[in-house]
Length: 290
Ligand code: NI
Image 1 (tube, helix red, strand yellow):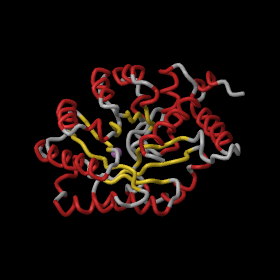
Image 2 (cartoon, protein in one colour; image 1 turned 180 degrees about the vertical axis):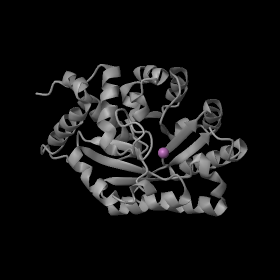
Image 3 (cartoon, protein in one colour; image 1 turned 90 degrees about the vertical axis):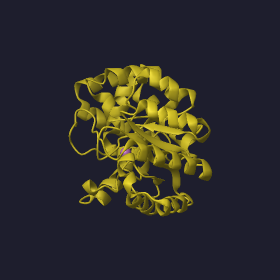
């Protein structure tokens, strides 16, 4: 019997206990294989930060209760690399798209390449795509154009879309509404806005990717938003190698840190970590058709 209240006393130990508990249940022989295992909905394992130990790390995930990973393309090369990882590892699936900070590389030819990759049997989403106004470049007009075109691609190939939106809440919403994104479906990854904006995305039936930021002490508005968002609309993600949760903030992130995210969501929702793991896995399977 695990008492989750103990977790507060030793987070590091908690990760081990939680991962073991999930793994034991997952491996419990109910005939369905990877049930009750953590679903990582957003990682960039093609990133050079993993060049030194990628194979070792990815091979260790199942033993720590991570059952499925979506590797997200952030550029054309990253999209190709996502597909390669998906071909190599049975538990990895790919998303293909170009991040708003990388859209200067896009062209009609690039879009054709993305369209072709969408036909791969292990590609389950278009993304990440969206708007990022944190830096002045690329120009907003250019970001908007390629966001709209990637939304149109998702509609055409009938895949959900993975949206990146940073300091661009209104423009993101305007483009999504203009393109009837509710009919396409998808997830707002690393959701970072307040609950008023969550309501807008909920109206379009979108999911919310929640990651390491939820463990940060100053994430008050996000915590309120997560309390507000129904559990059946939440996915867990890391955005590895970025955004490590507490107590590993600032370090390289990996899916091994997801129990810290599960714990933070569980605390906000007043439920157990296992319920969070179970619900977020079910939600992700539904969204990505797995
Ligand atoms: Ni990302």
